[in-house]
Image 1 (cartoon, rainbow, N blue to C red):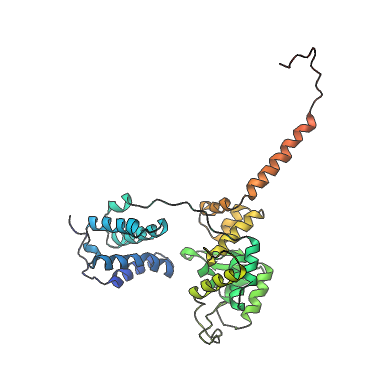
Image 2: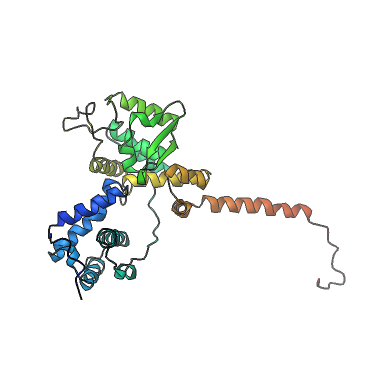
Length: 317
């Protein structure tokens, strides 16, 4: 089988990663998304030690099998691999590769991990630093993604209208409700560093650089702090990452009777289908519907007529 092109002879993994990262950035993808999808191309280059545009279809098929069966990648990781390959071969190299459509991984349906309200409060209570406490509360009470919260600026806060302006996925802006208590908390936290731009600036090694920092807190730092708080709170730490606070926010809103359309808007989901997955995490609407059905149907007993007794002991027909 012939190879897939000869536009480059580079065997350097970083060359192919950079190629894909630039493409994803041009599509408006976040830096993290671009790096995540492109990382698989670097792994592929190391695996074959040859230019990726010179791989055969059989080699690509074997590699997909290797990652799926031998390395036991999850469905999510396989989709990342698939997106990286499709970007490189079809979008960048403009090579028609029907193989990718044939081997496209099936979507898995897994229930999202969420915390109860009590567990969220326990974690907040056991958070060891003010900056992490302020960050966790903001993420939870506003339903933010990790990157959205890290990159908040003082200009994103509308104190008068109690709204947060969020720059979400695909550089799409949205406004989310800012609870008054969270607004007051952000004011108090910002007063501890008075950074001219960032709400959650990196503290620096000596924890005294927040006022002049030009970058936000590190992802790994806040993720680790949340896990430690969960451990101290006695909450099962399996799956406890920052995103679980966002999942919990959506679930708790639905449990409180907030419409799914409002939740969709607050989360910044492009389609209602993305938001509907949270319906599987709560039985509120099921319980509520049962109560409504009981209330409605119980009214039928108010119109029960008086029946004449059976005569002669005969059964009613």
